[in-house]
Length: 155
Image 1 (cartoon, rainbow, N blue to C red):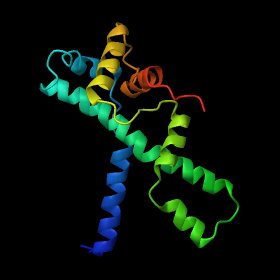
Image 2 (spheres, helix red, strand yellow):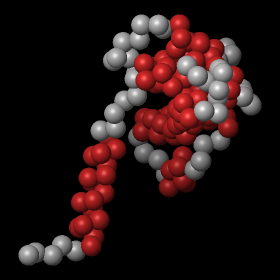
Image 3 (spheres, rainbow, N blue to C red):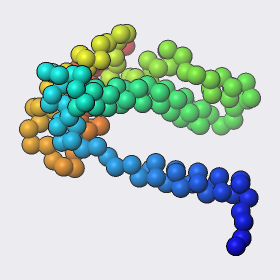
């Protein structure tokens, strides 16, 4: 039996994990609504926690990636960047960069917005869509709700 080096085994396992990560099943809005229906009465229940943590994760993911994506796109549009420019671009984004990115995302959460307030808006919006199609993603409803209830102030 042929033995592979640990580096090759690690590489193969990493590729397998990456493949699985890209194949994550999308949470449907209907599934999220089934968890979120208990949130107004019992936000500490397992379903209530699932609901709030999903929405919190959506927001955290947007905050973590939007500014970085924006900065990378801006940097890519420049023909060549110096080592110093690259170092500045790859640092953690500043608050101003997060705010610029939020405008592209079309929702702006003030500092601080209570999570419970945000979740209640999303829950109410889910409840207004009584006939959710199985193909409607939870993220599309959460995103639409954030845009509606937390629009960015005009500059």
